Length: 290
Image 1: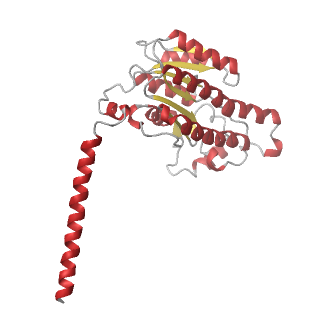
Image 2: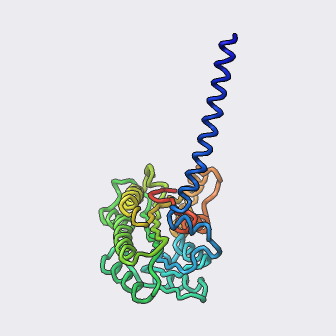
């Protein structure tokens, strides 16, 4: 009994020493490393509204839907926005919705054409003194629901061209310019889809394109992380945008019945998350799919 009592006391003493030592060590480590935090982390402590003041952002597909909403939230947070889209009328309408305090602009861009994308970035570089900090790849299309045997090759090529090749061309150019200009707080956000995680019946081409965007994003994130460029992707579910407004009511209701919240997402709900992922409150997030 005496032996057991002594062993028990020794064990308690050992645990107390272990806790005390580790608490001291942790405090010592904190003191040692507090001056070695990355610049981005130190900047988080100094965040004041608006979050993105002085930042320059390009948003492809900004003429409507999620892209337009992203432009509005970026503007609200103080960023200067460049709307890149093939829909000039829609782009102009987006610009009208933004603050007149900053020099927002629209540039006609077909993301599937390399020369168009190159021109976009050259125009941005010559038109603005500030360096490019944020790029959101929102340009995307979806094909009519159809079994794979009925999807024409031309439709497959177009979907892959806009959703995947377009993301590749814009991301490639963005990384090139960001590395050259050495801007701070640099972020690229690619819009994929939940269908890219596991496929969706009768949307094989669309699902394939978005699945590829997810993998592409993770690969690029690994390549440029140490250069201070964060690359992430968001996977929206069924969202109320012009792209989904043509969905037949029976299919729409069937999809909504599978959603836990029992409704579609709004473009604003998606864009708020996108801007968070591009901003100073997510400086340790890269290669992520949300």
